[in-house]
Image (cartoon, rainbow, N blue to C red; front, side, top):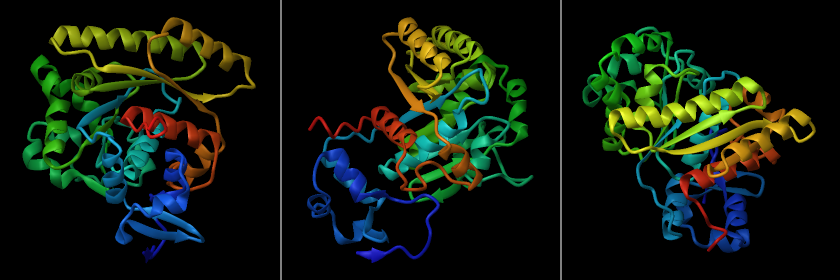
Length: 321
């Protein structure tokens, strides 16, 4: 076992976390890893390299098939960016080679991950026509198994450059296919808070569309419109419908409006998978520090909720074994 040479912005999954997920003792779990797959973090805490986690989980039947996951909502300020970057970091810790494709002109995911592009750096708007030639140089590597294609305001011009239906259908899908060729198995799309053409193209590419919602009426109306548009877009282009999920962020059990909204969502969409993320002051702290909720090992209900969400999303079902 080697020693971590410095502070990691995106630390490793710990053996303690994985042991708890498997329902086994930490010492027993550590025997199943090679010495170079374990890394001393701090104190008595050991981390596992993404390669080691991947080898282990593949042995447990977890599939690392290629997948494209879109986070999209019509309502800003309800945790779309937090959900995108938290999902990406956790997926990478679980050994999924992950790329965030930031399509939002506001570039919130890019800023949160410390990957704001310089004026001349290529973004999606620049590379979508020739991803096989331009994509590799546009990606920013953030850490083991984690990269991002950053965004900037110029991505707002996508609606004008994707007027052709054929371009709408292929633009995001073509970039995702090139990411697959480059060895990524997970692409997470951070979409603009709208139902514009960039979002249409993202839905055409996605295997799973996740709609974050809050407790306000506008957010719930946006959920109805977004789910309806997903079906309309796929029917128009003759595409299979992606799996849809609902992510209720910033849920506060103490507030009646939160409880009522949760009841309403369950009644209106009983067949859709729903994950509830409890509100936490940790979100503002980690974002201010340029981190995610998985950049630290401090326990919190929200961290547990996002871990459960990522596990369900990626098919990591160890407790049933």
